[in-house]
Length: 296
Ligand code: GDP
Ligand code: MG
Picture 1 (tube, rainbow, N blue to C red):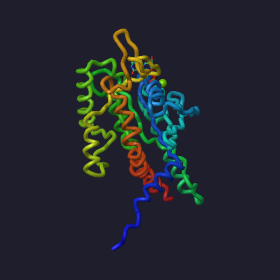
Picture 2 (picture 1 turned 90 degrees about the vertical axis):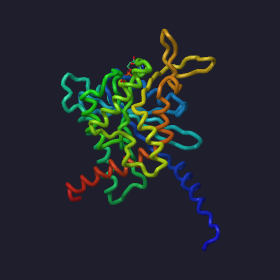
Picture 3 (picture 1 turned 30 degrees about the vertical axis):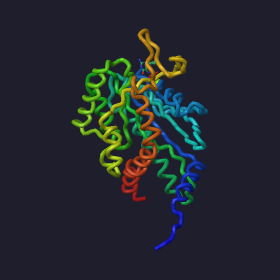
């Protein structure tokens, strides 16, 4: 019917637009203090995704018990700009009585949806609404080698409906190979038997190709991660690692731990999907609920 019109040029246009505009990506880390959350955040920034980046720090006071602290880095790779923000939540579940300890976290997440919604409802909408919504919540499990604790179940069950949760096993260098495999398997069983939905969820797989990729990830979660803020010399190369009496655990070595799997999931393979799920599923649920209750 038509001759060649060159529709594929749209790809180049889309790319240029994204490059010019840049994009925001917001990750939250949650877990008990001492599990290595802050260290892992540093590892993420220090590792290859962001060797050259600049920092901006600010603190946001939410409540006395949980003070959220976010760090934003502007990362530029091959001309593409990403504003990566990590929200650190010190001390989740540190109290003797942990009743409602997830509240400051749910409040924060919902506040960001509310902010976004208000911007959308403005008569004069901004050309680009600043996006502070939490695109992913990394939940740190202590490396006990046992099972999910009631507090883990409670947290993930509640938060799983408002944000994409990626559970990880913290300080995985403390587990032997068998302990690690068995712990991972037990956690997957516990997640399933408690009806907890973690990212990536089957319901949102869009095509068979994505299904196959995501099945592999679902069969391998929770990633057993190790963090560090130090570099060591291994065979003439500077590597991020933890030096112990019995050797160096290399954080970016897939034979040693699954930090790279986590980083690849977050940055390389699923970044856009995490943003889409946040916008199309979690934010949408919030929006519909709010508009219904207030008849806006
Ligand atoms: P946070 O309270 O969860 O932010 O934990 P931190 O990042 O402050 O780490 C607490 C302690 O654990 C520090 O001494 C870290 O050096 C150590 N640590 C952090 N990550 C790891 C890890 O992957 N393995 C081990 N063995 N220790 C870690
Ligand atoms: Mg910390």
